[in-house]
Amino acid sequence: MKTIYEAKTVDTVTVANIKLVSVSRKNKKGDLIPIRTLGTPPNLVNKYYSIDEEKIYVLSGLRSENQGYLEFKKNSTIDVYMKRNGYYLYSFMIPKYKGILLKQFHVKNDQIFAIYDKHLVSYKF
Image 1 (cartoon, one colour):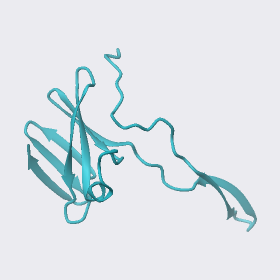
Image 2 (image 1 turned 135 degrees about the vertical axis):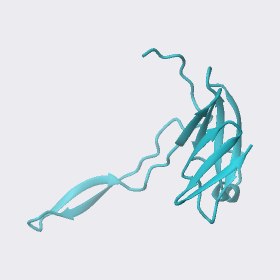
Image 3 (image 1 turned 90 degrees about the horizontal axis):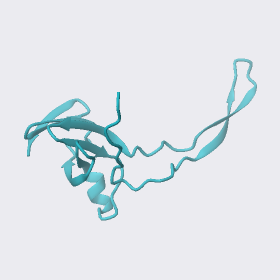
Image 4 (image 1 turned 90 degrees about the vertical axis):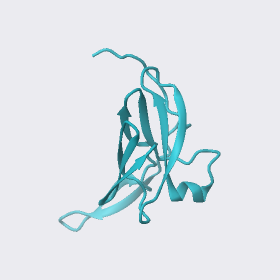
């Protein structure tokens, strides 16, 4: 395999925001054992992607600087890049379906097939 190009997404995370905490758990004998674990779940930057024709579609897990908090909570944001060189093209949002955010998706021609938990919804571009 040969690398064609490397590119970065438009998300601006440069350092992982990970918090470790110490907790104690009992072993089988009842002794307390100290354990280090994540204090909070990590933020996923790029949750999922799909490729169609000449574009790469990336489901972003982060709110952009120009996006309001409520807008971010009500929608899923997909960033679009050129497949051949990784250049960012644009972003668009897909709303929640029955109160559920988008989990996965697939783009084919002028349609996006969105998976919301147990629901499959198609949208036309």
